[in-house]
Length: 70
Image 1 (cartoon, rainbow, N blue to C red):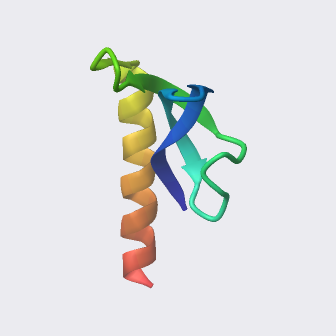
Image 2 (image 1 turned 90 degrees about the horizontal axis):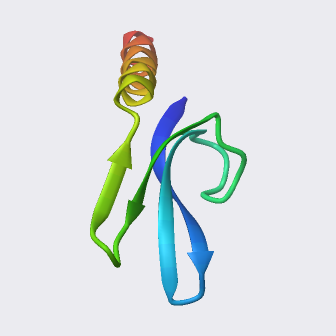
């Protein structure tokens, strides 16, 4: 199953998070399937690639519906 997660990047005390599509079984810092955007909590700035986000979100929803059937 694929999830959208925040992956921590940046230096100590200056964290920046990447928004990634990642396999649910892999750890937070594991290999991501697709980079969707980033979030900077210090500057309160978010950047999303809307096309990649919608594709990843559709993939997540389709897989969840598939597993709910079984």
